[in-house]
Length: 187
Image (cartoon, rainbow, N blue to C red; front, side, top):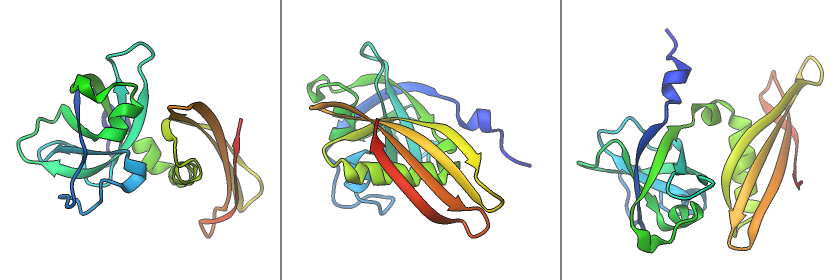
């Protein structure tokens, strides 16, 4: 039986703190992964190493969001708390001097299932090194012919210089699951 997708996407209200990270993580994934958009969770939390989580800052108007990768596990840390890398914490629009902010933590299985969206997200993060992806949305999908599909995604990238909206398009072969072409552009 397949798991209930709506249950997996359930947001949890909690709190976020920040860290500079460390050399060794329980997951074997460096804190620098995903342009430092990384986090640690409790060993008893439902979140797994390498999983993508959407963190929404409830402490400021506009409720900024960031996508982070779980790279570390901390014994005894509550399931409704997350320890973000300092860069992820700052990407949520909060000064680290604040220390703790109220957040929602949402597992993003839709991102895991939309592998082409995650593929383009990683390209966008690399193409815009001083920016962090803070929002993500699949905006279209269509069958080009019997073997080709086009998927279109939009990303909001944020930095101290401002925001950029980027649209990524990928065309892939549905039989071989290989990329035929992709495109990334500012919109």
